[in-house]
Length: 119
Image (cartoon, rainbow, N blue to C red; front, side, top):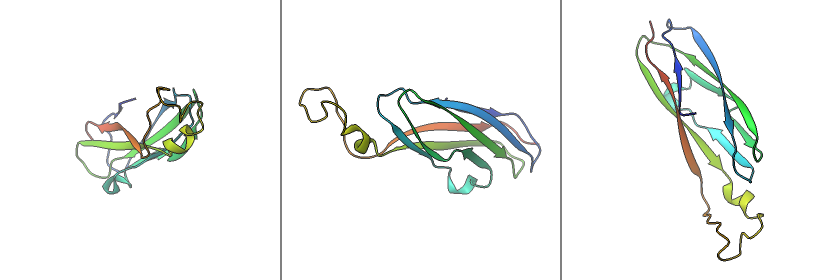
C-alpha cells in the first residue's frame, strides 16, 4: 500500500478508510506509525503500533479530517522496530555465509495518505 486517496470533503468532516498490511517475512515485525506533528489532529491510524507475526495480515483504519480548505499530501512513515531482537534467534544467525545480513537499527517504509482537494 503506497497511497490512500480521500475524495474532496468539507472542512471539519472526517472520512475513514480501511487497508491491510502483511508481514511476508519469517520473523515477527514490530512496527509503529509516525504521523508528522503538524498533522496529528488531521490524520489518525489504528492501531498505531503492533507486532505482525510471520505471514500475518492486519487491517489498518485510517481517518482523515480536513481542518482547512487546501490540498493535502501527507507522508506517514511506518517504522519497523526491534528487527535485531527477533532475528538473532533465527537458525544460522551467527553462521558465516548463512545469507542473513542484519545490522542493528530501525528500518523505515513510507506510505502516503494523499488528499486531493477539500471544499
